[in-house]
Image (cartoon, one colour):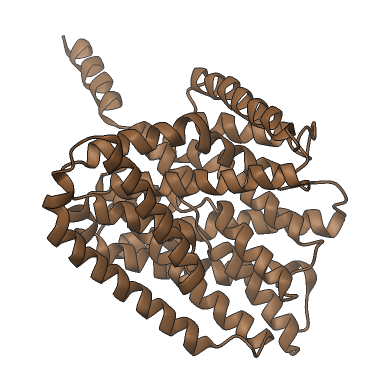
Length: 406
């Protein structure tokens, strides 16, 4: 048996802690430090961890567990009443937040490579770049909002709701594009699975609303927490395997279904302990381990820069417009747009799926990963800036004017 994974795990936990502390001292979210740690120990810098080996697969699987636990905790911490109030804004934000990035990604590919759009395959490749940009991964945003205590507010709830809907819309668009490349993919069957999935979620919600008091009688012991984790993992598996819905979406719904229980704070405490101490650091580092920036020529570098600009602008503009149409203030619309910038593992999954269908070449995979890395790295910094309270600034201003008048 190979025990190298133990050394890898020790290195990951140590590096994330060190860089997390440094980030905190620089008044940055700790997740930024964890991401930097992943880039430094990954193939882009020191290359201390071989992700292609069997040991690397262990890290990959644990990273997947990390994001599942993050999204489960996010679901548990969601204010269901607030989510219901913001269901319409979340849908509008997600809809426009998918459409605009597809247009921007399509334009970025056409502008750099000038493909022959008269050819169906080239047209689909151009559209697929936009599909990659339409993906949203809020796991980084969730962690940042949790640190700032903004997860359960109107803006945080809208971001979470929009991200879930965004995932579903992304799957539908991805299915349409891939179905045109592979006739074995049935568009009707995928849409039917999505409808059945939400039907099952509705049935689970009704079942838990009837049995909630019985569950609460179990108390705050280990059994309740373990059963909650079992429920989370099971729904994640069922979502991915039987319905084609991302496992992280299943994890979020699992937390959402349990968020009305009086035991919610107990479940958050138990699951967050596992995630914060062990699984989440592995997930954040894994993002930096998935990319190698060597071998990028002039055209690829140009496309990387163009795609990166499109990635930032499209989500801020698209989701910001959606939020503004739903009555949010300019500042809140900007916060929602910034919160949706991060692409994370969702974009990587979409890109990998496209690679399997011949919609994206190996050469273009590096720019996609670069966009994922940079958007994931910069989003928490930008989010902290736009979420900064104005109250302190106003108090200082009022105090200054008072002194001048005195």
